[in-house]
Image (cartoon, rainbow, N blue to C red; front, side, top):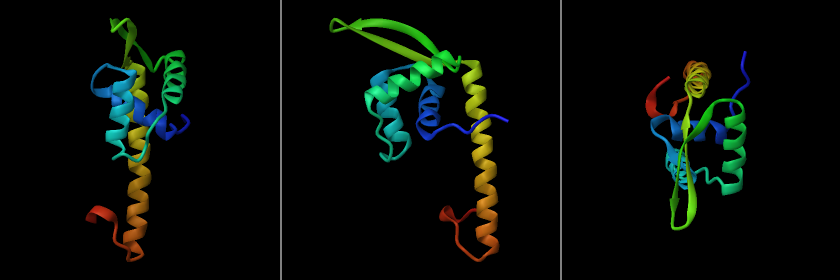
Length: 114
């Protein structure tokens, strides 16, 4: 059984699931995905990206020079996509269990689904 992903890691992998992105793009996408609830700092992002690269979950897609600065684009790997899919399944199972129990206890679940 794999360990649950921390929320920043989950959101970074989610941001990269659609297409390769550079660091600032990932920061902005995480903010959008989380409805402005999660705002990663650049230091946190790059520490997580380094760890994810070591684990084989993301890799460098390409690099380019923009205004004399290196811009590195990252992409999710097949292993990273599988790890994200596994986490989505785990979260979905947990949410379903919680929704069912809340509904059975007479509580309304946000969104009206259980």
